[in-house]
Image 1 (cartoon, rainbow, N blue to C red):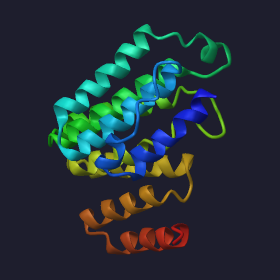
Image 2 (image 1 turned 180 degrees about the horizontal axis):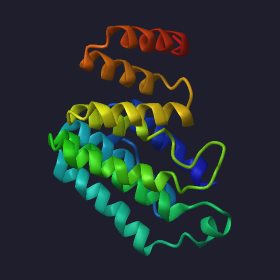
Image 3 (image 1 turned 45 degrees about the horizontal axis):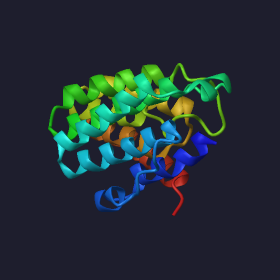
Length: 196
C-alpha cells in the first residue's frame, strides 16, 4: 500500500502551494517510501519558494532513506522503490537548479530522471506520477536548445499522447523558431486535448 499512500504527496507536489505542502504532517518512519515522497513534495515546494538550501536538505533526507531504509517488502512485491527514490532526487534537484537559475543543471537532472524513469517496470498507475520529458523539454527550451526540446516533447507525446504540457511546449518551440503555422497547429491540438 505504500505507493498508494504516497500518491497524495505527488498530488501536492504537482498542484499545491509551498505553504500547503509545508503544513503536511510527517507521516512517520513506519513506511519509508511514503516518508520519502513527503520529503520529495517538501523539496519541490521549497524549491518553488526559492529556498534551495532547505530543499536540498529534503533531497538529502530522501538519499538517506534510499541508503538505509528497508524496502525489501516493496522490492519483493515488484515495486522499484529505490529507483523511484532516485527519480525523486533527480527531479527535486532539477527544480532546485531551476530555482537557482542554473538551467543547464536542471537539464542534466531531468535527463537523469528520464533515463531512470524509463527503466521502471510497467504499472497502472505508473510508479512515477507524471511524464518527466515535459519538464526536460521545458528546461531544454529555456537553455536555448529548441532542437532538443522539440525532440523531447515529441518523445513525450509518443509515450503520453495528447499530453497538454508537451503540446504547449511544442507550440512554444515553434513560436521560438518563428514557425507560426506549426505553433498554431500545436495550439489547436492542445485546445482539443485540454479539458476545462
